[in-house]
Length: 305
Image 1 (cartoon, rainbow, N blue to C red):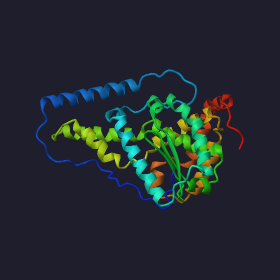
Image 2 (image 1 turned 45 degrees about the vertical axis):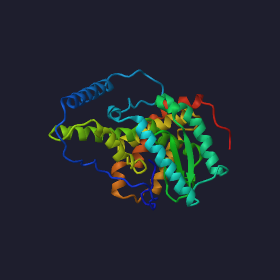
Image 3 (image 1 turned 120 degrees about the vertical axis):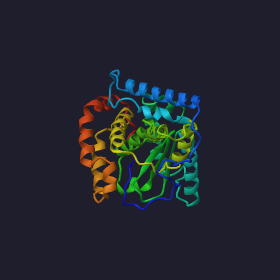
Image 4 (image 1 turned 60 degrees about the vertical axis):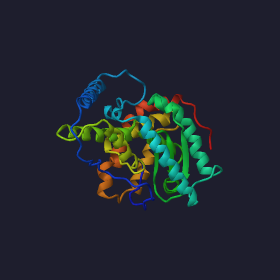
């Protein structure tokens, strides 16, 4: 997620970063234990297959989606995201902070999204069925995000404060879409499920219904979920490729992160602990340019603005 930690926070749905503590329950039945064993064995198989060789492809290579994401249903997370997105739009509309369809900046964002989205299914087949939405909200925050299911928001702050070109906007949008395509939110919830089930094996209740409960507990934090450095680096690369295939110059990733680094030069340690340094991101982008520049060279370019 692109965010400036020094900006005032926007009021969002509350969240709890801890897994549900639950209450003591009767010992699990033999059938429940068998289901859990099958689940864990299946996870082990997925993990082992994920480490196998992948077919060569043109563009960046980041491996398959995390096996942990398979522990929670994608449709449940996407449904939760859609509800939160609708609530957020409603709140912004009441505050006169939601851009209307005639807003020039919103039209610009939607035009860029229309070029990028067709390439999303190469990274995640589910994206073909997503009901993509792009909206713009008035806020000084330097921020943008894409929720599971293709729900995109940009804040005016990131466009105005950084004075982004179309190519740079495409880098931001590609990065945020990449988080959704790579199912980073679903992966984090899956890890929470695995941790909870492992703890239960040591003496607490089993019940596979806990998976649904974890989705419920963690679904409320989709808007404020923080990704780790590995997720951010992966989204940088996948977003770079998406933008390049859509006809946007991937070298704009370098100028974007110079602007972001300047905006976040006084960022607190908490932000630095979960985001790669700007210099690291620029170096990674430069290293990936040989893989994406040929894609950009062959891509149909957007009309000149």
